[in-house]
Length: 98
Image (cartoon, rainbow, N blue to C red; front, side, top):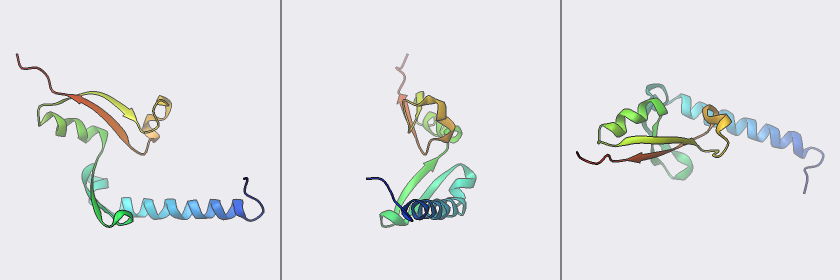
């Protein structure tokens, strides 16, 4: 069912406000500026979520002797928007000992 009348502007306003709240919450945490760290998510009862940017993820994984095989955006298979994805999936493996 399509939105009618005032519903379209109301939906746009609602989503703009929700995006502004999310951006304000993310920008106010040190994890955003450092590239990694914990964020308490009030939407799920204060769950501590570990965040890491792609450039800080590889050294963290390598420190436990894993290798990153592939990085895929949350909108896979749309690889055009890899920089615009809200999250990433990482494929890692442990190399065989020689």
